[in-house]
Length: 84
Image 1 (cartoon, rainbow, N blue to C red):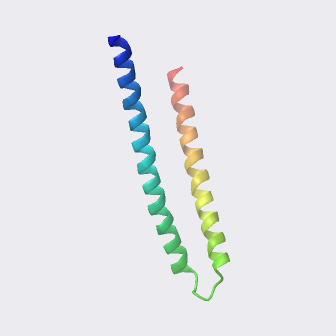
Image 2: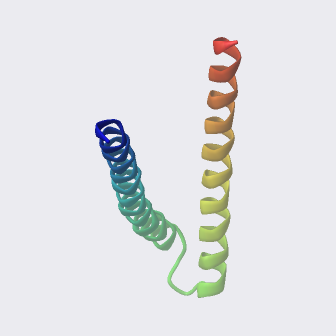
Image 3: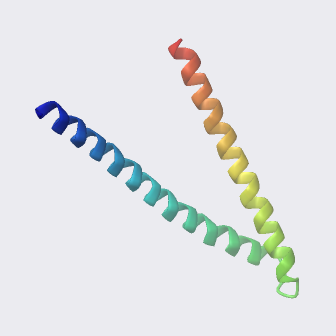
């Protein structure tokens, strides 16, 4: 019974850490979202179409997401290769 209690506590803590990390990740993503939008609005003249600025924004965010995902994947792959 005591072993099950320890296991439950460990899983609870693990889940809380994952939720907190996801929450902070969302806050950081929203902050970058606002920053990138502001930078694009500064760069493009106000007479430009909103569609163009949204397209540039989408391309920038996609490029960042691909770069981060690729980098993290490489790091994970390198880590798993060093453990072998």
